[in-house]
Image 1 (cartoon, rainbow, N blue to C red):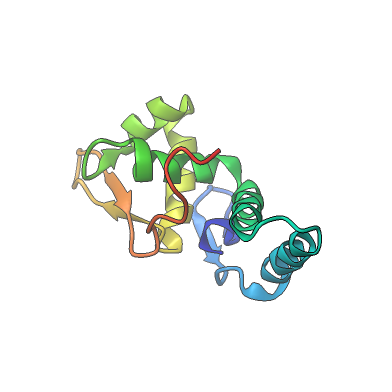
Image 2: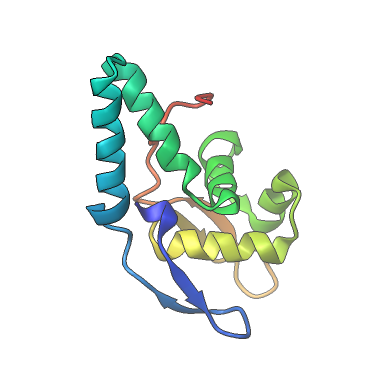
Length: 137
């Protein structure tokens, strides 16, 4: 799952290493076992899939998920600046930039460089397609 991918930062907080996106081994098998258990309990398939999907999303670091969901659902523009996203999340710009960099490392969002003295913009990337319907809580 790309939203959960591990990264390592150096002491200056720059991305130092980007590890591969989490494969199906640990989380995937756990979610499959959850789905099997819900099936055994007689939960209808649509509800079971919704539960499994929410468990998967609940395992994503909250700030990453909030940044992704802002760009995916709440941003009424093609791309948003780091500052705009930070204001929407009520977090410092530096913190949000770090989360966006992590998402960009896995292709979930894309950075559009603003150039010298101009703000970078962010938009969902090739792996940032919708995974759940807006408003699913």
